[in-house]
Length: 102
Ligand SMILES: [Zn+2]
Image 1: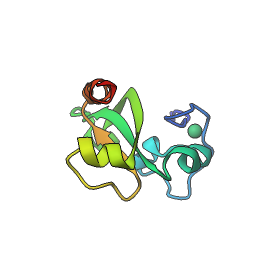
Image 2: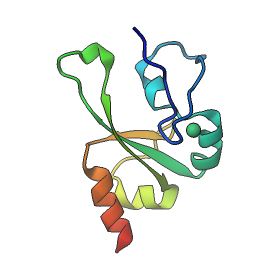
Image 3: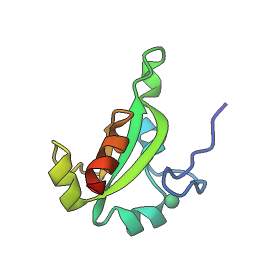
């Protein structure tokens, strides 16, 4: 059974995908959110490896955050990903939020 894919940012259902069934599509936001948030920011998605079912790819834990490019470069030790979606360890969003709140 396949679960309906939803946008990780706004929760709207996504219909179809030109890229097929690659698991990375799980994190791809809907076109509206990509335009709104990912033109000047990077989407951080908390995920864990599913060691029992590695073929499923990382599993989302529910935490998402959009960081502006400058904040991303300042806080995250990696280049901005090509698709502007970065998978991070669960708990890191909390840390980043606290860092940004200072
Ligand atoms: Zn969306």
